[in-house]
Image: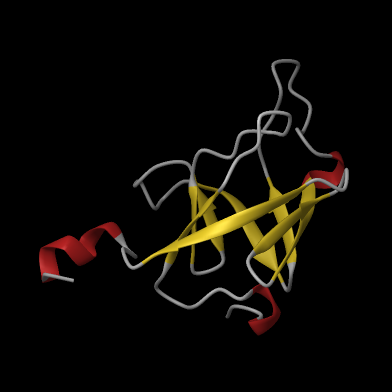
Length: 103
């Protein structure tokens, strides 16, 4: 269940409006999980309340973010642990299978 403080709605896909000097989040959020592509079996991030955990490793095998905590999301703004803020943009496109249903 999504924490209402995040500003996210169930079934809606959200992308990160990336800035040049921050980690590039190229995937999307859907229902409290973060995916890199349309393969919904491979979430690399998740929300616990408003906390965003990102489970990806650098080339040396170390987590990108200490303890995997990337930051928090409130009112569709991702605040990274270093203080950088990134806006989330919603899309009516939710689950990739919705296209089959005419949604």
